[in-house]
Length: 363
Image (cartoon, rainbow, N blue to C red; front, side, top):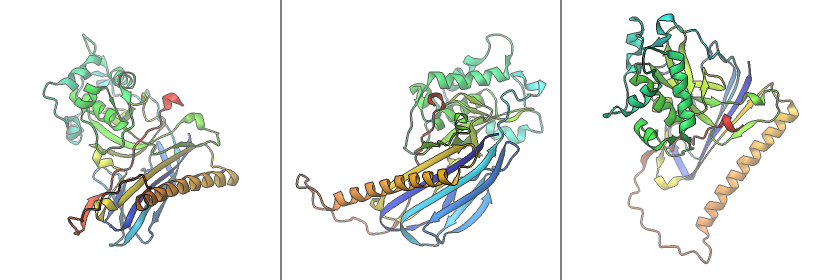
């Protein structure tokens, strides 16, 4: 029953004050039998934002931030979670009717699962389905549990993980062809492969932690260590989580924050600003995951000092970049600045938070 604390900071810097539009946050997990939320705190800069909470169509907890047209050069959102995790067993009992594949979902469940069963990406030559069928036994039925575990482990062993900061998720055919991708790409590939075989699958977004840090005063620190995986519905066992990036089964080491039909529906932070595109300067995302008992006051002070030092370093770096732009060296050739073609304000979306994952295989 690990005690897990998460400190998630997202900071945007702008060259000139911009008007902040409504932002949507999905950073608060739901209390459940396997996850007990002890405390959740949200700090917002600039202050004065009106908060409104709601549940989306999937039951996820969503916070809406509205500054009512206020302007700022810095937007900083800090989410802190303190929770107790009760990982479920990997060998959850499956209903006898579904212990071997193929099987059919019960008639009273199928209407609710149908949209999660149908594939969401084009596969005209059935390549994803062909890849999924590699894990079926040549003759007879295939044990359902073995099928999904084999699929999870195959992605971990046969594909190359690479962090990607650009927006969006690669289509399953792209991931399958290149044999590489980010955690969200692997999750979508497994979802579509499972759907091609008739399983109901959902996308999961959250955090990853390392049990090796239990009783340790050292924190797992990773710049942008949010994570993505998938969940597949098995009669009797319910929604079982599979992390193909790390080969993890049944949610062990995984802190689930949101579940959705598609990745874009589970974005941790989205929003926009009114201003010019060149007003955007920088973005910093930092996620600190600590496992074990709460730190002593001395340890907490040390961690706070470390976070402040990193924030100061990032601010100094951004400041140096701005100074370099204003005061070029003699070696620089600075062309005459073109006239701004449009002085009309336009709403542009903020870049999505950087996603990198903590790879347990190297810890």
